[in-house]
Amino acid sequence: MTEALLDIQRLDAFYGDFQALYGVGMQVNRGDVIAVIGANGAGKTTLMRAVTGFLRARPDAVCWKGRPIGGMRVDQIAALGIALVPEGRLLFASLSVEENLMIGGQLKRKGPWSLKRIYDLFPVLEERRNAPATSLSGGQQQMVAIGRALMSNPELIMMDEISLGLAPVIIRSIYEALPGIIGEGLTAIVVEQDIAKALSVSSRVYCLQEGRVSLTGPSGKVSHDEISRAYFGI
Amino acid sequence: MEFWLEPIIQGILLGGLYALFAAGLSLIFGVMRLVNIAHGDLIVLSSYVALTTSVMLGLHPLAAALIVVPVMALAGYGLQRLLLNRTMGNDILPPLLVTFGLSVIIQNALLTFYSADPQKLKAGAIETASLGIGPVSVGVLPLIVFMTAVLVIGLLQWMFYHTALGRAFRATSDRQDIVQLMGINRAHIFALAMALALAVTALAGVFLGIRTSFDPAAGGSRLIFGFEAVIIGGLGNIWGTLAGGVILGVAQTLGAKIDPGFQVQAGHLVFLIILAVRPRGLFPRID
Ligand SMILES: Nc1ncnc2c1ncn2[C@@H]1O[C@H](COP(=O)(O)OP(=O)(O)OP(=O)(O)O)[C@@H](O)[C@H]1O
Ligand SMILES: [Mg+2]
Image (tube, rainbow over all chains, first blue to last red; front, side, top):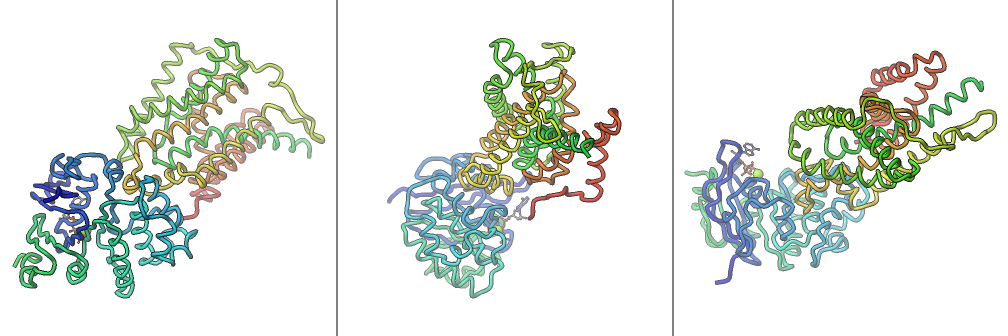
């Protein structure tokens, strides 16, 4: 068995006195697409924040290629090749579309992704390249957020609810772009409220419930009943 | 007509100095939302550093600037990394209080090392040289100060909009947290902003010291003039800061023309009027 790319073990996370994650474990191998599902407030975003370094974690609670990275600075973790498409997109408002993409590439990691490749993937962004990023429609902003993360040529990309607040047709077009992204040998963690969507793109699913992993298994094998029990706790 | 033309031109040129006071203040507020109460004292500290450098090395004050600018930039980097970064957070009050303390410390240190006697940087013939332009005569030194201010502000503007560092500054200003996901070390970016701000401050200090005499307590009014120029021009607009400096300068020289004792008050008055009519300044950033 090969060493996991990302190995999360007994991860606890806190907001002040409030504990949001309890002993979460997750193994992500190179090339995996992992779906993380769970109800509102289950702790999905908190998990992303702990992995990227925004929330303090015990050093060996998060290991990258066998090396403990918990508690490292956010920019140091990003430099390792872990990128996040944050919930709510969170683009830089005073930067143009192209500048948002370029700042994503500021790390200058080597790899297939460049401005040109992003524009091939999302042609509409090239048309709007000089527009202020936040003047775009929600779907286009989500494309910028995905492109910004890809520009760092990450080994692992984590996407937190990329379909949140978007029209179904837009969601479909973004999900249609996903195979082209993940096909590049990328490893991905996709957080999604839409269970069917999550299962269809992923190889393995983790369900969170009140800060704990309530279910995990191959996406093709978990049953509907198992999921609704893990999701709602009934 | 000429009676008014001369003070107006003098005021415009004086505005260049005020824009230099203001640029550093505006830069650090823009990038990290830090209100630097010690800014005026850092200007005066730069004047003293220039004094010591020019006396000890026998340099012309303008040549001493070549040393003072990098020294202050380095000091700014260190100050931010070692002290101010520890106070930065969601609350803007702790860093504000720390810079207030810094202001007191700088003033007292200057008092200890240099005494309360007014000092001046001696720049020789250039201090009194003037050019006759049509009916008015214009001081060479104020002209140099003004052109330097235009150049500095032009460079800052270019840096902000056409370099990777400027992009990082703007992104940090937008979202201090998310910018770190781009692999950018926020502590380093903050320190670079402070270094750049103090480099500009150093220039302002040299020019201030050549223009007028200074003493350890001279920082307060420089801070106020800098603030007024920033607010008049509109936060977040660097060319607006130059305009703000010019408006303040003209108000002051016209005020002095009416009554020499009215100079500073005239500036405050115009500032208050503009604040009342346009609370966001004349040229706020459009966003
Ligand atoms: N900044 C914060 N301060 C305090 N508590 C927080 C904070 N952010 C989240 N929480 C709490 O932590 C728990 C997990 O929140 P989290 O945002 O991780 O959920 P989520 O699974 O991402 O939900 P959603 O689907 O709504 O995005 C919730 O109970 C939430 O109220
Ligand atoms: Mg969430």
